[in-house]
Length: 468
Image (cartoon, rainbow, N blue to C red; front, top):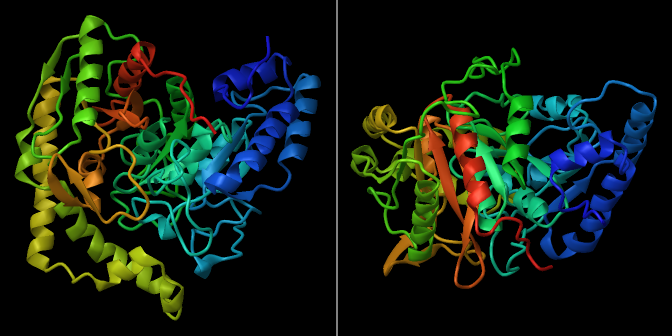
């Protein structure tokens, strides 16, 4: 039987390498060949890491010598180009940082490498990681592999497009408001934003506002997300938000001793949602109910009381503008569209800033009440399937909304820090992936991963890939 190395997940690749059914060199070369064949149409990969084949040969030699190997020994991975990678270009999607080569790895990169993985490439992002589409002046625009005229999302669109097309089995991404979950939804892969602080941000830029930035893995299977999370989580002695021990978990574990209580919603004050997206969320809820779980349609009043997008804008604007001003001074002619837009926004009055902070407190209280009754929340990842490039407005259910509306279902959990996972569970009438978001209480990662694994086993679209 022929094994498709570029669409095997990282767990399977690690097992094939460990049992010497394939070599790490074969796996890395297969992915390099895939990048050569597909990336000209996608522009998802922006830099190849020098020495990946040499590292693969060394991995094969170590295995042949009987050495102890890590759980991802010899498996290639990619990282968003906001993650520092020692000796490899990290240009942050801006001409201002063109040619920048860090001396050290980001904590997340170092931890994946310690598990035996091999850095294959860096992937595209919007300027400074800030936008819902992946485009910039330095490395250009990334296309969605399901429809090249559409966006793969942002800000981790290069990562999601790489994984969706077999150019990478596993990736590292970051999330301020949508950036891990939205691109995964737009391209049909899986991704996980753990509780805020679970994975250190050390060596990743930008970090403002730090209390909202998250790190998470992207992959093609839930078991890969679980493995990557287990390797990435835990304090590093540098990120003051990363304090919880890796083993600490408030969830129900991989084998709960009682039924997991599930609630689902498609509205609850979140604004208009595409009917096919709403139907996909209900289909996932129905699948869990058919599997024997107690499932209810729910409403969370806190989501309707405070508009999460408004809160995010009021707070992030005041923290992002000074951080960007510091690095862009004297380089104003090298700024892309969103940075220019950001600098044009008025400052948030202190009274509005305080009210926004109080809004987050109310959101936290609302979720505390909800998760006292339920273990899991199902809802859309994005309010629409992947959209065409450069749209500034969308029409959803007859209502015109601005581009930020696409993140109205993800940003609440960036503000509060709750763990949230994105996974495909449907397809739109025009062939685009549609995903559902699985959310649990703070530090309840095991609950999220358990329900996602169950949904994966019930999925009507598992294993589908774009026809490139």
